[in-house]
Image (tube, rainbow, N blue to C red; front, side):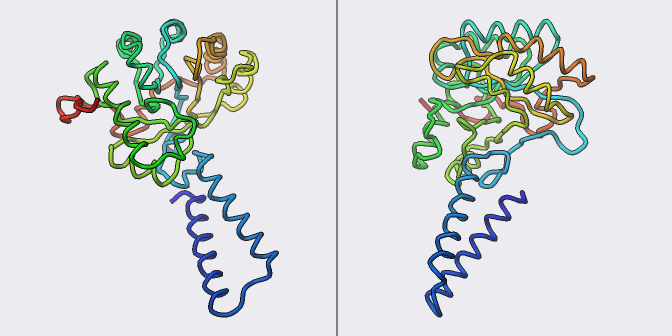
Length: 276
């Protein structure tokens, strides 16, 4: 069990015990109560915001113990201009990556998704709408969004994805229940390039990734902006990132090799594809 999840369970038990004592015997000083409440709420919020702590959901955030190499991942695509640029660079270096795509963009540009698959790269789901408030939505809405995203990939590729990266990396118990019901594997990251923001500079992205490179790392980059048409910093940063990986004698490896059951399944075999 992840340490942060164990800490949450222990904190919950502690809060319940203190509450019971306060009801049956004597309430603690108000200052203590306020401190306990703030600490508990902080722990809960951290569990939602920090995926690598795996408080609410089991997630792959690094390679298995003893794994070698670096796994590259790209979010927020596909994009008709920038994704092909990323594919071109990856092809020139002879490496593979995993693309976590947004369902609505898949519906808009199915040919780009097919180009990703034809180039030998893996494809996972990054939700359908990329709702920044995804972790605040009720369970029915979360499930509907993911089912729409799955259906979009089934239409484009004839395959049902297994890998899922939550929008902005936020999770909670609701999302955990839905991904389990839909048989999705949650994937986080070890190194964030922070290239998804408008002010990101390619040189800064390269420096950030180069500094943290190590065996078993999952690198998060972007092949499209979350909204709009601007060029993500990763497009210009990627050649230098790949050079840095090679200079440190690391190998770029497929993420799927670290995750049993990561390969997509046929939509026909699963009986899926009826969701619209």
